Amino acid sequence: MIFSKRLIYWYLQNKRDLPWRNTRNPYDIWLSEIILQQTRVAQGLPYFEAFISAFPTVFDLANASEEQVLKLWQGLGYYSRARNLHQTAQIIVSNYKGSFPTTYNELLKLKGIGPYTAAAIASFSFDEAVPVVDGNVFRVLARYFGVETDISSHAAKKEFNQLAQEVMDVKQPALFNQAMMEFGSLQCVPANPNCETCIFNDSCVALQKKKVTLLPLKLKKTKVSTRYLNYLVVKDEKGFVLIQKRASKGIWHNLYEFPLLETDEEIQVGHFYSDEFQNLYFQNPIEEIIPFEEKSITHKLSHQNLIIRFWNVSVSGILENGIHPEEAKKLPFPIVLFNFIEKNL
Image (tube, rainbow, N blue to C red; front, side):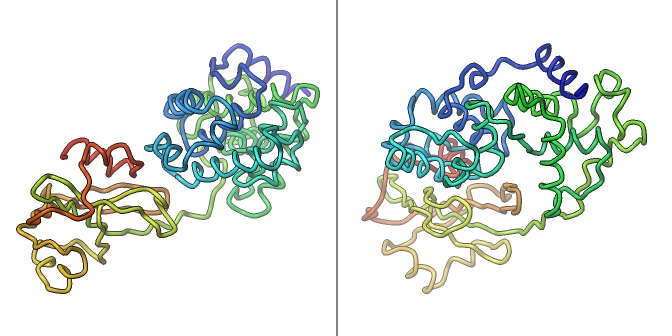
């Protein structure tokens, strides 16, 4: 088909030189695809290089501790990706003797590997003619063919998958999939694409109908909640602090944090001076509580706005389970907490 030939020609002229494109090793490709989910290439590349350096094979990753994996992942967000990555490595080693399944359907059975990642591994490593359909591909296909199906609907995945299959160069599936993803990343970008230089500007339906800014169509809006997190930086006479592992499910599971007080709204210093509060959190008598900064920090996640405030809680005596800040830095923290530690402790 003219579409695929023109697309592949563009790719060969414009592709970026990225390390995971110079290999057919399914481990490297899997690792890169997991890292690049919800992540720009510029941000993900140093993490990919760090993981390959620390864990050059799936056996190395499987034998690592979860804390090692989370620490290396620190700052990438969506930490369930890292936990699934680690667990899947262990499954591949224990159930598959370290060899990745070679087909799309078998890859789908692995934890943390969905249709997109399975298609990427199957096509890039094993030349299976299955299309990779991610946000970039949705956008390219929606605009070029003028598809006005809501991409957040249940029907969209099937429709776009079938369309991608129809235009795919089945003799060069890896090349085609890479080209589609790269074209959406570099040329057919979400905002203000340069349609004048586009290789498809003579045949793109969205351009002809002046709907480039309207496609792809996404009607369902992400509901964003607001949470108020008060982190209590409890320090004793030696400068040691209290930290705890976040056991609750949801954001930052199994990462470390300071003792946390979550409230319905922002609070003032007077909130802390109650017998109930002091008995609940510490055995050491509190000498002083003051905020580190006058204003809270707003940390935005995909579905949540976190209003974060750090409180300097000085206590008398020595904390029974205190840890030196330099030791704390070796543990995996949410990046907003790690940055605070680096700056203030």
